[in-house]
Length: 233
Image 1 (cartoon, one colour):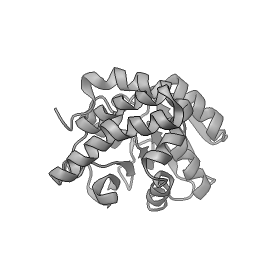
Image 2: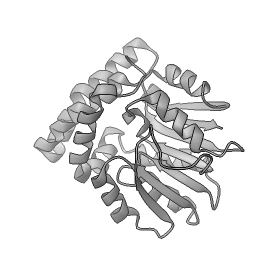
Image 3: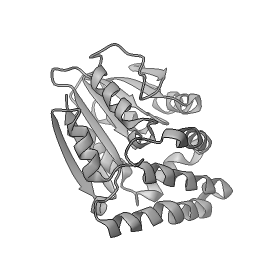
C-alpha cells in the first residue's frame, strides 16, 4: 500500500543501494539537476544550532553530515545506516572526531529516549521498511523540549499528471541517464522507482507527519518533485 514504506521491496532496494555507492553522489547531482546539495544546505540552515547533538538517519555515504559540518563545525553527529558498506564509506568521507557511526534501522534505533536535539533525513526516509514505525522511532529519540526533524526528500506531487510524469522520470529516464553516465551499473537505478511508487504524495506525507509531530512545515521544490520538511517534537 502506498505510503506505508517499502515493505517487501526493502531487501532489494538495500541491495541496490549497497552496489551503487561509488556512483551515489554523481547520480544525485544528475538526478536533481545539480540542486541536491543546495536543498540539503537550505534545510540544514533552517534547523541546526551550534553544538547540537544530531542524528543523521539513513546517512548513506555521509553527504548530509558533511554539509552540516560545513555550516556548524562544532556539531556532534551520530550517523545511522543499515548498510555496512554505506557506513564504511561515510567514515571515509566525513572523517570527523565528533562523529559516531552506528549500524541500525529506522524502525528500531539503538538509542535511549530523547537522545538528540535534531534528526535529519537526507533522501532516506522513503527507504524505510515501515514508515509509521520509522516516524515513531524518530519521535522517540528526539528531545521532547524543542527537538526537531528535517526531511529533504524527493517529492510525489498531488497533481495526478505531474505525479505520472515524475513517475516516468524515475522509472525510465533516471536509469537511462545512469546507463549513459556510468555504464551497466546505472541500470540498477530502475529499482529506485519502487521507492517512489510506494512513497506517499506530498500532502499525504505532510498529514502523516502531523499525526506524529506538533508543527510541520513543507516547502515544495521543482513543482513538487522535491520537498524540504521541518517538524517540531
